[in-house]
Length: 155
Image (tube, rainbow, N blue to C red; front, side, top):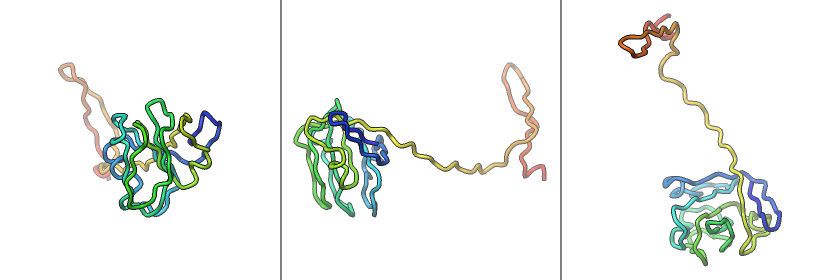
């Protein structure tokens, strides 16, 4: 969820964070549909760090540029195959579906806050069987396992 603290407006969509180099590099490229906002956490507050490209984007998006105090320094509708540089230095960039800016009634100087939607990841299956009959033993002051057999070994 995105919240315009200044105007008390809320956008009730999902919010994800791009906080690694890889997540920032990929962003929303190649997405056939965009149903969430992506907040880019940038390493420094500059105009060039906050610039975005729309290469390989399949549709237009709304973009909000925020300074380190999360105040809007620029915003716009970004169209595919263009480059955008904010009017002022920015530390955060929020990209989302068209209509997000209108829903938040964004204006220069507005303070924007976000609540990240928890991403549920599927657990990875263990390649090993689950140990049964674990026995802990102590040898020379260290703790170890002994006599552990996997389900496959018991069958």
